[in-house]
Length: 450
Image (cartoon, rainbow, N blue to C red):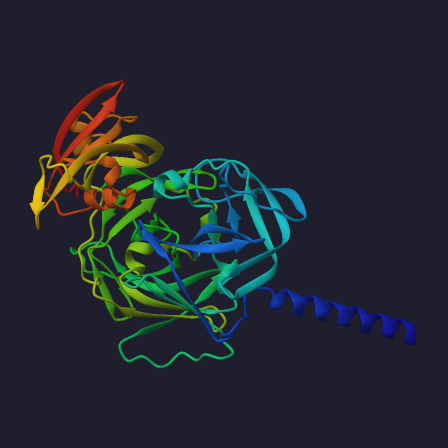
């Protein structure tokens, strides 16, 4: 009897130690400042891109609060990464397709500056079907969410493009009179808040909704149709490809609603995408969920994410009341590699022999024209929305963009091109493309569809 009791106590001890070790997994603070770490990020298409070092290799990851796993889906030829303890699995996500094959690698070391996490799991997608790097215009290696945030307090300053990570044992959030605080509800390690929406102005009726906080979504708002009686696509809408998920293409209807209320903050006329049930079948397993709030809304605030204490705090910034627009061109542009571009340069040289040039202080300066070749980014049309201004002008999928509004295309970043198509209505766009070896010129006017 004593032996059995001793064995039971020993088993409970090991279970306790194992559970405690699991709870302690996550990022810890080291170095000169064990209280906080500030990290610069890039904001591209409303998405946060930050540096993450995995097993000594620095990679670019999107901070995506909508994922509970760290996923690697792109390694270029120049990247080499040692992975530990690999096994094959399948993953299911948004999209209408089948689960995707992946590898699970265990016991990896992650760090961001002096924040370090050992014994981390990493999921590796074997085929990058949604090619997010082409759609972002820079190399994106993966996405990280819960693994980074679960043991820290993160303050996201979208205006300054910085995230400050605080050690919750050494930092306490101060009361903020102009802030709104929300309790976070977690389902499968993903954060949800309660909000209110008003679909239209006719009935003036608000609806309570539970929304995923999705920093990895570039849109303002996604709603799942028929999760509540009031959640239906308004009369004015257009169908579109909303993006790519782990399990394939995501389809839905794009529209606008009257407003969304986050506490006392009212955001009027936000763009919203209503997703079909097929694309969101996996996401609807959490039956209380009605949709997501994404980067186009989150970037209008300073955001504190406090996972250890199950809360989120937001404070408005200068962009809160800016208008929401869709891509009014109907053109989806992606990065398509690099092209060799001939550039002209002018060099000043002293000319003691009196050749033509400018004279200053009895010295003649000559200007010599030289040419050099550099690799520059190339962009192409990946999708044309039927009936859009770009479609009506005659632009086709596969067209390689050469000039936009008189400027060579390679002088733009992909993010700049995207924002150009999101600018105010009635703006004239001139585009020159290459198609089957021919140069073609088009013009169209940006027009609101809803």
